[in-house]
Image (tube, rainbow, N blue to C red; front, side):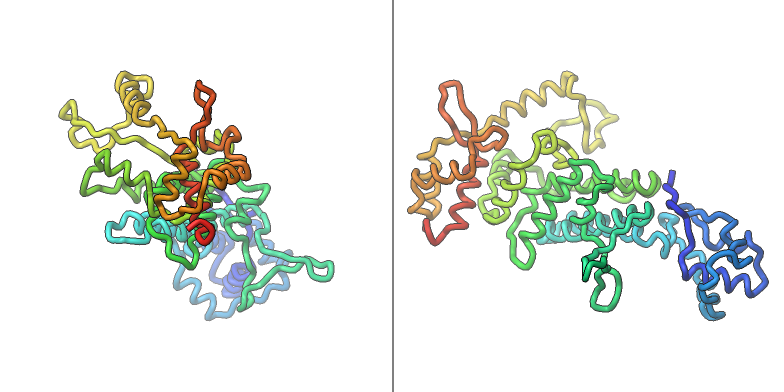
Length: 400
């Protein structure tokens, strides 16, 4: 069911139009009311009689005959796909369109800047959706500053009010999103800050799980905050592939040797501080395992994706295979130092390695950088190798 506007009030422009319709004498209160109600907003009929009798809004100037004619000519201004009002529900319409464009751009097989375009459009989509939510609930989301002891609303170059960025929206105490969804968006905002005004090289495969979670989170929030009927699942489907991914290809993708060091550093820094329950939440990063299989019945021959229960015989077998494949590679310090030297950092020694992990407190539980084995020795994971590589890249002059 669609959410109703809190307050359901007419704005000054609409009050001027109501006065013009009253002045014409051709419309009764019920007919006037019908021009200003819609599924996302209902107006009490008493508001029209208040205007007619002069009990409220006496200072609002009556709209001109030309303005009224223009309003009636374009009424009802309904988006045919969603039933939303093009003017009154503009933020919701644009939020949906921005996210649809984000996904379509990402799924374009000829696109080179998939993640960059997706993040840019997704940030716009979320910003519009949260602005709609705050506006509907009477929460002032304009940017303000204090001047001479008075709070002043900041303006754009041409005089419009400045409104909150997505970061401001997420930081509001009344933000309607859960912690994992907020973390997902904060991660994408962090990536956006790192890739602004510079080439990134390919990052799509590395952050794809976060992008997928962002899509699902947006659709969930859209239905929760606006209404079930406005969800996007009917507008999009699974993207088709031209080839399978072999084991060797998958391993190469996961290594991401050309991932920019600033993206590596930002990702590691962000996720190191995440609570474990948030990092593992599907709303933060949506991960699925694909296991190639042939159909075991004619009825399933056209089923592209099949979900199995974890406690079923099939689920246990898949879990056994995945656990076997998921054993992490482990390294000693000398192996890591040798790798860095081979990658062009001959001045990076075990001494610098020790200084780095102590500075970052990298053996602290929860970092995910390594593990103590039964023999009492500490072994480093690939995540720590990536962090060391990022450090060497950031200090190339010192180590190269």
